[in-house]
Picture 1 (tube, rainbow, N blue to C red):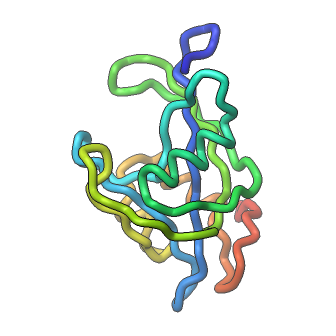
Picture 2: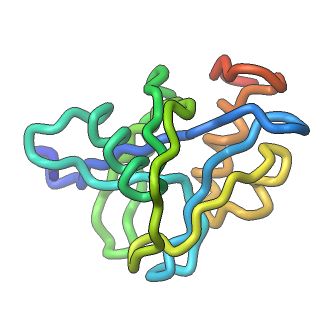
Length: 146
């Protein structure tokens, strides 16, 4: 979906779970771009950003997430040269369903929060994770770390 000014609208999730050595972040590999990113996708007509974020996380990863607070809206120019805005939401794991690799996402990986920056392709994704990943080993609190 696009806004009135032509900006492509998308939403995604920063999905975090407790891990043995601290929080883990859910990442996806997209073969079309050969990149590692957070799960996200375009809004459908009439769909809220929160609903789109939950849908995209489940479609791309098989994880039925629990929605937390909105974290940030990031605007950038897409590889096609168009303005794009992604609204990011904090999420935790509600239920893990079946996942099958697709042409859109061929690998799903839980990565320790301390290692995410070395794997994520885009600086904006790294910044989001750095700013909002919980620092405790227990349930996420999603407060900015800066």
